[in-house]
Length: 451
Image (cartoon, rainbow, N blue to C red):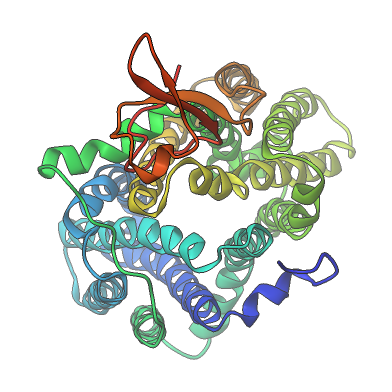
């Protein structure tokens, strides 16, 4: 066990995890550079239609996230994880290298799909590997917090890094930087000793759907899906409408837009720093529901503060954006602990793939919804509608996720009497089943969730 006084960075003493974390940071920075370069490439190809091109590219990315992750698990889940992760990094590097050579919009769409499909296959395998490496709960919690910090830091650093790079190199060379990042990530993955892939039974369709079927069978994960929708509703307000809220409603500048997004990232980062300590004092359910409710409150504050006049509206928006960032981190950072607790190693990768696809499905709904609402009704009504949706999702999550989530559950088994798993069980004479009680998770002996 990791002592309580050891800081979050103590988890980096694990050599294999340290290499994977370094690979994650490098790949994230490469992705951030690619995001900026893609926007500039779209402008070079499409001119005034660049916004439409980028919007379509983002939609393609979300569709790839939703569709590819479960299929990739079915096809690749049984293979050696080191080979899978390194190969997917190589695919991402190759796609990034090809982007500077395109001169047609459809080519941009195709390469964006390839790049995101590889990421959609990569991320769940990567996420499922970490709990297999870090068996201690505190270590794993620290790893989740570091991962959230990496995502938030990338959001803050990549634009500045891209701007500095563009002072010295061309847009095409930004894509080269992305390819170098993915290549470095692949080399770090290859240098790490990773657990083997999990064996999979059944045909392709069964293996593709097993993660989603398992996910919706677990009450805490049904609650998590509702919380994902709440976070997506709140986050879409920030990521889609910050520019119009700042520029149109508050008459701010481009630098104000950047500042608002930076405050959003900072709110998330600060919560990620404090979560390992919070999770030692409180279970996930109250923290995550609190985070979701905090997002609802922040959206209501946005709807109330945007109308009218007054210099106070700008600091009010900054506070709301910081709270929205904090709310998202409170919900999303502990999610890995729920997935880890819900299945053993043989099924965990499927659950991570399902979570990746389903959570991105929520964003696929809320992104265009936020854009359409703002275009039709303006940001005030958009914030109000998204607040209502997030509140409904929070209520659903509280109902779906039982309060006794961590308690042992009594259940029956139809197993041979000499089976290792039922050595402590009692025979039920009326049914001939073996009954015992323990904290429940999906594995080879527990295929469905008890009622």
